[in-house]
Every structure is written in C-alpha cells, then in structure tokens.
Length: 201
Image (cartoon, rainbow, N blue to C red; front, side, top):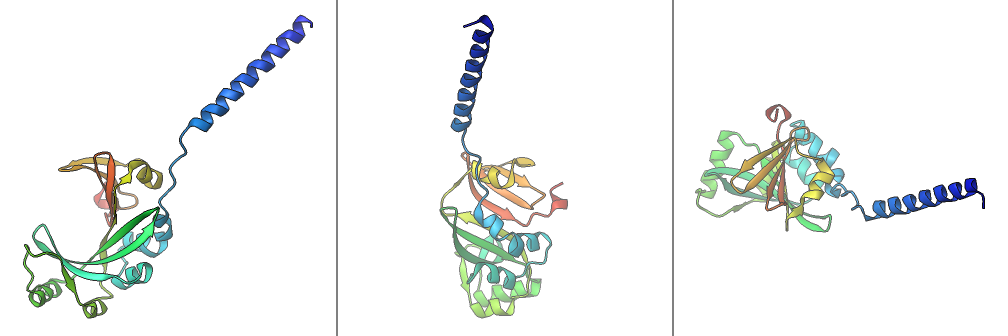
C-alpha cells in the first residue's frame, strides 16, 4: 500500500466514523412534539371564528356536538357557559364556551334560577340554549382530564410571547392565536381562547 492510498483509506475511515456518530446522535434526539389534533381539527369551525368575534352558541354546538348549559360563578359574578366533551390526543377534554349575554338576559336567568354566588354550578334548560343560539361565544377553554406536557403546548403553539406569573404558576400568552395556557408545576392544565390580539400587545 502506498502512502497516498493509506491517506485515502484513513480519510474514508474517518468519514465513516463521523457519519456513524452523526446518525447515532440524530436517532437519539427526541422527536419534535406533534401539534395537538383538536387544534387543527377545529381551526376553521371554532378558533378562527372565535378570534374574529363571530362564533355563536349554535356554531359551537354544530362543531362540538351536544352541549349542556350551566350558570356558574366567576369571581362572584354569574356566567353562562356551554360545556362539551371530546376525545383527542389520548386525553378526554372538556370544552367550555362562555356565552355573551345582555344585562337583561343575565338578570332574567339569575332570577329564574334563584342564583347566588355561593351556589354550585346550576344546569340550565336546553330550551334556553335554543333561545340564545345566536348569542356570541366570547371565550372557549379546553380543559384536559389530566395535565398536558409543556412539549405538547410548544409543539402546537411554539414558545409563548409572554410568561406572566400568576398565583398558581404562570400564564403563557399567545396573542397571535388569542390563547392563554395555565401552567403549573411544569405542566399545562388548560388552554383558554378568546384573547384579543390588540389586548395582548
């Protein structure tokens, strides 16, 4: 073997070794998290109309199926919500839509239900939902039956534009998609949609 042949073989051997280690490193890297299926599935029917402030109670029902109406207390104030269930990404989810009411509609429901802030969530007749089907949805929360990994959130929305400290952890804010993620103990507990982009700037 000539000296030149020896150099060529050594160079080839080094390339093979480097390729082997590079391939091993590539294989050992964790796979990038996939976006959550429901976000893509309901993009056109829910999230874009919500961000454009034109999603109605009827639209939410058409996309998510049968829902149930509830009067709940939010910081001591009455709130009408519609709740739905779905299965996605190996989790069970509750979708909760907050319905915009006029002051007169709110007062009427409060009186009809004899609602008080300290009472538990109260179911509302489906007939009320039929009467309010054209009312706008102002917020939509996605709540999993168990916490999500932060990788799932980042795989769907990327890194947050803002991380705001709150009493039980952080709020990850995504103004461009109008979303806020409740984060605690290095896990995500819910995702709320309906944040207006101009309010998140």
